Image (cartoon, rainbow, N blue to C red; front, side, top):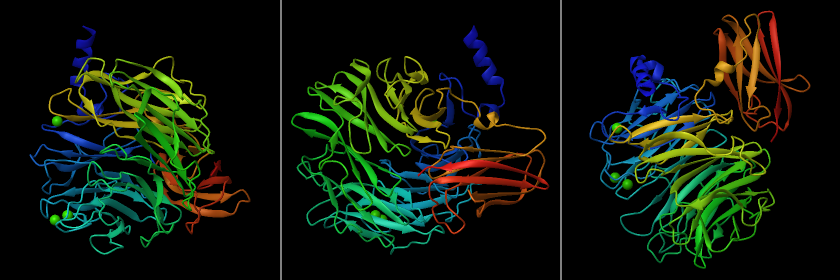
Length: 572
Ligand SMILES: [Ca+2]
Ligand SMILES: [Ca+2]
Ligand SMILES: [Ca+2]
């Protein structure tokens, strides 16, 4: 009876009231639930605690590209089921693509389609928080040729440009890693079709992934050659400048002891200091193991050549890894599937590497879920200062009866949300993909494919750093009736923080950033602000765009005769 009442209540609520993060892991939030498939979702966090979610939507019969924006409470900025970005013809075979939220708060998407032939060409769109297509109704054409151009990846450089990389399989000749760079207005920095930045005679490189590095560069990792089963699928990395030129002179051979498993894309994270951390798994000596390496901005390997294995324990597979880099400590957290060698039992183990590459959780890592008969996959890690979050899908009800669960651990590897993982989505249904993002306050934002109502829909859930679901982080803001108020999160921060500015009544206000000596470095807001809290963002840079050093800064709010100040600690 209780279930019936809950259902009846849900059905009588106005639709808008449902459109927010749920606090119930049996319910979650239907991001996109029209007829047909909503599939291959991507999620990117915004500075205001909200996010963009993009996906391929088959409701029209074609896999159209749709986008939704949610605020921190999960309220939909646009109509339920999102706004149409592209209805150009799409292949029925879908591969990975990319979405980011840029530093100006827009969404940037890059994907292939078949509007100019079945070979696949690439297009990029930039969408404002209001839903305007800033690069035109048809986006920007990245290339227009007869070659196969799949799985583009995207990043924003520190100077505000966008870099797209992909692996090209040409009609004839060798494959290449390609790069295109776009100005904020969508103008191509390189010739149409991009620059070939890597590839050797007789080889077909693939799976490139970029991270920003320094003022205007990127570090890209890729697999050396994926041409055939016997190809040397080694892991390479290289740094490229704003002109697309190598700054290391030649790729760094990160791993070449054995070939990476077929169709395995290595992962890369920026280390906050111009370098990068790389993660892959390998098959060597009859066992799978996961391996990490850290490169500095000059391309030096900071850890032993061929990388550090996450576990030296024999007789088990340490496979399908995920990782998170804690910029506050320089520690790298890796979690993996601790699988028996007959691949009939699964578990979760983790390792914490110090900045110097020490295995801080012992040579065998730390067991979080003992290896057993419960099938699990799609491990996804996110960092928190002094620890990490982990989420995954498991299958307690057999095939198609899946959950999403998660935990938070501290630097010692202890669970912080109780003695067992929390349920993020506990209604048993077919689930998949599980891309994740992270709000500035550390809240995890998850989206997954879900067949609970028939043909695939997308569901999502927020998980706050205390392990609770739902809620409105802005509702917890101090809301003094009489005066101005300021808050910032995170604080200490590196390199970005979000500043909440509270005004008791609408008024002309000024928010400025000052150094410890009181010198004004930056104006973040100048003009009319509404009553209540306005959300602003500071990127740790002065008015000229120069990254400021670690130290104490002040945010100063002035409105009429009133003023308020808040101490900010930038810890790079
Ligand atoms: Ca074409
Ligand atoms: Ca093409
Ligand atoms: Ca559907």
